[in-house]
Length: 279
Length: 258
Image (cartoon, rainbow over all chains, first blue to last red; front, side, top):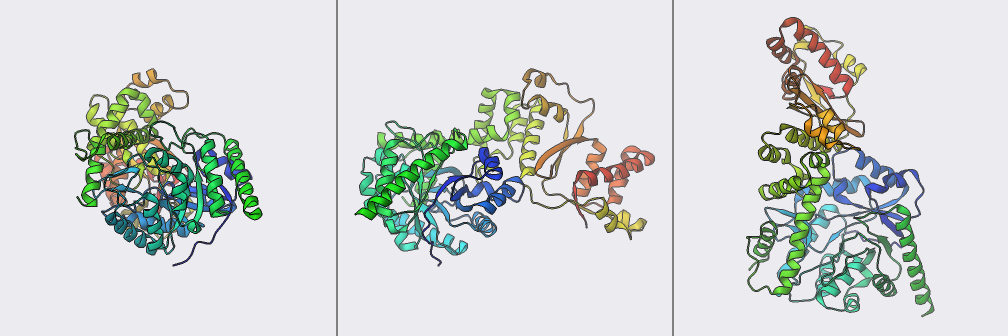
């Protein structure tokens, strides 16, 4: 299995509202992330836009429907569609989530939580191996936000995720906002979470906004909050430079606002690099 | 309980308030689960709203929301693409609004437009291409001519002017005028296809639609012409047979001569 080389850059998600900006302008990003499923189509404008953007930028594919935690196995048609898109676009990497989305009969189209048990570990590792074999490359797995912790849990999320990476040779897409949201919802320490992961396997970091509350919700509809920026600094001090991107999927602002947020990430990353050099 | 059984129960309960949650769950688990249940419904109803914006305007947001919820109960999503959540919604609306055929017809048009938008990229046959493909044809070969049509091309019979409805419910909607739109004097065929990167549609006569249906189903040009003769008589059928082929070609509906 190939490895995924480290890449330190700053990127944004490609959203329909910004197609024209990316096609007509020079956007100051090192890579663009796209939602894989939006482009797993037969043809037409979405694919034409993506191919044009690919001419100008590195692209990474980020999926929401692989459903690696599904006890009912993977959808082979989905996998084949994803493989065809990857062959066409030649992304730097492909990522999806530590979650499940579907049963044998229905698809929730949501990133549903897994019980962190030995059985679930076997299931997800088997599915990830199948996916990686089909795609002929290791995947990046993202830690999800979750609102429900199962009484059946036999290990922490970070122990589960670390074991998945160890067994499958996959890499990590560290969503710093998701760590913050889940730590708040389940009452654990975000620092413990970071310390428990094999951080040398992190290849990308996601940043996003969430809706605070007794149960915080990962809504991607607002700017990154100060606590998450702080956690980014802590994460980068442990991972070293990696690819960083801002996710916004609702209440999408003009591109300039997202580029301003990305500049905050750049400053925090530069500061973490300076501190590491001085240490 | 196995993971498979646990996941089936989890999903069943997302789709129905009546489906039981695990008995050992406490208030904390139930509160967390409610987030997933609400998100499931909100996301899918939002998806239908995005797929059918004009239909939503035509029926009103409250009725549309109820119809969308009804559709999701009848047809919970099964595939990996969220786009498919809207599949069959026109038929659901047809059952819910049997007296308002414009609702179903508009929804069908919106669905067909979305499907055509991402249809496979194939260059349609043009005039010179048709001439080349048929230059050696004798009468018999013309009778036997079969066509392959462009991916994403769809048609159906309509009783309302979809073009007028589309315009009335567009950028500056006039919902009252759309709801008052009188039916067509005669039913017509609505054809949806992709023109370059843009999905579009037009209305055609019923006879032409039937000929199109036959040929899309694999019938020969001769069989389609025979059908036109049975509907229109020989002179009118011959006139339409030539005109429709020219229209299909110039509109970019034909992919190839088979």
